[in-house]
Amino acid sequence: MLVKEKILHGFDTAESRWARFGPYYAMFPVDFAFDVVEKYSKEGDFIIDPFAGRCSSIFAGGVLGRNSLGIEINPVGWLYGTVKLSPAKKDDVIDRLLEIYGKRDAFQDMALGMPEFYHICYCNEVLRFLLSARTYLDWENNNIDATLMSIILIYLHGKIGEGLSNQMRMTKSMGMNYSVNWWKNNNMAVPPEINPCEFLIKKIDWRYAKGLPQVCDSKVLFGDSSVQLVDIARRSIENNIKFSLLFTSPPYCAVTNYHADQWLRLWMLGGSDSPKAIQDKHKGRFANKQEYYELLDNVFGLCSKMMAKKSTIYVRTDKREFTFKSTLEILQKRFPKHNVQIVEKPLTELSKTQTKLFGDKSMKPGEVDIILTR
Ligand SMILES: C[S@@+](CC[C@H](N)C(=O)[O-])C[C@H]1O[C@@H](n2cnc3c(N)ncnc32)[C@H](O)[C@@H]1O
Image (tube, rainbow, N blue to C red; front, side, top):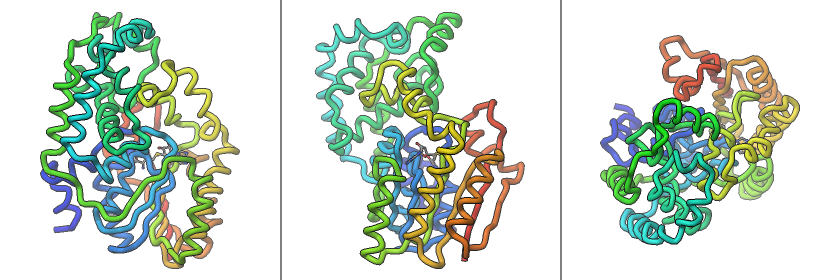
């Protein structure tokens, strides 16, 4: 049996429960992340993912005994990743939940002043609790608060009964007006009554039921990899640390905006209470071809300085022409001595692709793997 199979084994192990922590747009299937790490690296190696998302690559690396480093610019992905690598103790998370819940009454006036969307999405009890958590949880600096906040984020929206909200998709936050109209047209303008404390304790019980994952020295940095990598590359050269696997999936050009699609979770983390402001701020580099090209070129260029001679570069990306051709061209330029293999997924695997998981009919199904080896 492969190590991966022993470790993941349905939901029977702590690692399998935490591996799937955090619904995220365009996420790697967990099995795939473990397969690539197992096949292209060995224990003690260094692995990097500069577009880490919810950090499946880094988590698989850490669980399989590789020193793994991720970078993620979206706070939602970063928080899922950082927590799954090192969740706080269950009792501390529950104590903090009770504390935050106990302060909810002070948020009645603030709740009343929120836009209509929030009153149809959440019952008053949930909305006051969310406002309390949003105000008090120091998720960037405190591990207990980060763990509680990431659990709240997972259940912030989903199908009725599966989350804290009225009916909504789990992976993507829908627009405000769209949602309000949809709820009204479908006779769902009254949100479900939920006790957020009882609801979340059940979810915490399930997540921790098999314990905490065993993860070796691994972390994920919060920020822009084209900035963070400058320092990381310098330190890796100074300390003669060579990475043996670069395993990533970059953003897809003009396909999605990882910030706008998560606007409600970003609101929970302190962002604007309307999706509009978020859209404008972060559209640039994924929508504009030149800026997109420069981002990838910059990031893979910086990574190339830290990779071992016999390293593997494993990149899963979109099949569409611009994203695929640019990525391939940049990788060949940055790793000129590596051999390139391109693997298009056979049709039978299509149901497992990132685009399918995400379920957007506007996307043509299909990713492609670009694998560079020496
Ligand atoms: C295709 S997704 C990666 C999904 C990931 N493989 C997973 O399993 O969750 C691309 C990610 O790159 C992130 N990203 C985009 N630009 C970035 C940048 N300049 N620095 C760091 N991360 C960035 C996006 O926020 C997004 O999470």
